Image (cartoon, rainbow, N blue to C red):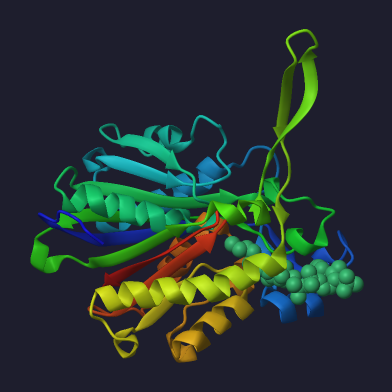
Length: 333
Ligand code: COA
């Protein structure tokens, strides 16, 4: 990482929000031909939370997570300079960040969406840290939120069992260089494998025959599970090792490994490759499934609320997913 750091960046507070409606594996077996045993042994997931009805949206979850983070430090929302909403399931293709800006009263913040699927929160944190460390902004809200239940094919048992809806938020602030806690990052994309995980736009309807004008809509999630599995288990440990190496940090110094909560078997395979003990891995996907961009901030917030993460702990966070995009960020708490 080459960056012009004139000041430090730190996470001040986190918050998260989940819909109240649960869908267990048993209930899932009434929708598609599957079983609790199959889902749990292949993924580690027991249940997931889903947005209900037409009146709840991604924005409600994101606003709730953001307000919880703000309330923890009683920050006036007008002090926020920038809001980054990492999501692949916005309410509006032009972006949903501005609606969050308005609803939380962050009247002075510029707000934009960042699309990087399950790596979105990591890319959001890195983007925010650049604005803070180069002294452009002082307070930034990074949100990871997704409602992939709206985008799964509910007749495809290999994908609909995996995903859940949630939002998580982190408030970051600039600080002196000695207090800097965003230590390093390492990011990657390989578009050669984009077809393995996608929500593609489909050309469907001929609107004007003479002009050859078509108009379509987005399809549902397509995933080649085996390829995504192999990619994650191969590439994520390499990214983590590169990031640690370039920071002169050894594996033994890592206190917490927070991976995108995709699948318990992926988490364990990565942990084993890195020779990190199982008590250092943060995992909550049993209760929520894969919540895409929300998974890392949701798990981080829960672990903080449980009082497990202590001052000065070293947290290695890695995201991976569609793109394919993957990356690591190292944080000193
Ligand atoms: N319930 C029961 N059977 C199922 C099933 C389900 N929900 N989903 C698939 N199957 C069946 C398949 O039809 C197949 O049957 P067959 O052998 O008769 O053809 C069999 O189980 C094996 O399917 P396969 O796709 O090979 O399973 P798998 O071991 O690869 O596990 C995943 C599937 C999705 C759990 C796994 O590939 C995975 O976790 N991949 C990574 C996905 C991921 O994390 N994506 C997000 C990254 S951000």
